[in-house]
Length: 197
Image 1 (cartoon, rainbow, N blue to C red):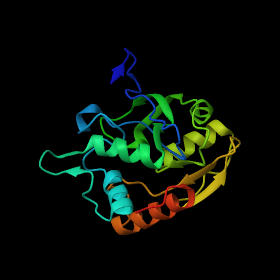
Image 2 (image 1 turned 180 degrees about the vertical axis):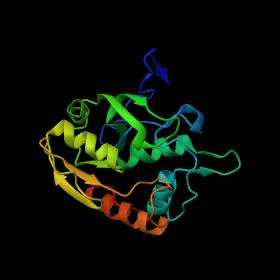
Image 3 (image 1 turned 135 degrees about the horizontal axis):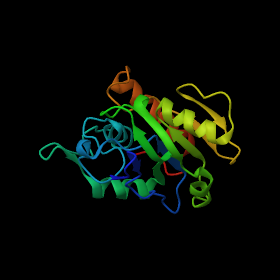
Image 4 (image 1 turned 90 degrees about the vertical axis):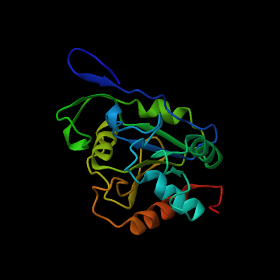
């Protein structure tokens, strides 16, 4: 992670914006580099995002998992996201960590992402999807929206795309994997032109 003397961390990844992207996941900010198993979004091996997508799209939560190496199959993930038009970035481009952990609760947003600039690069975009309270609050603050949507609900943004909030894929979020997968499936079915397998 790039950081400065005042402990500001700058985002280490470029936005992943497929040309035909219909969904854009915006998290809060990547976890500390020591928690990464790959150089891509949701890089923490104990986060279930890629297991959820494996279950939803391929009926196998291990589809993207390389159990032997304790990592995810990055090439397969990139191909999958390009095929289905699923983009990724975060709602903050710079943060301070107030504690030495991965909790969003202890992230201070120093610089918000220019969400409109991301949307402008995805002309087929239908929805921005957030999976955590911090990300939802940050984007609503940037858009001047007073009420943050609840989990499994959506609102229309001034950018003429919907903001859809899902349950967090973190194992710290108290919801069974199967229920998370069902929620994600419903969202994907709502927005994707390419049918799920």
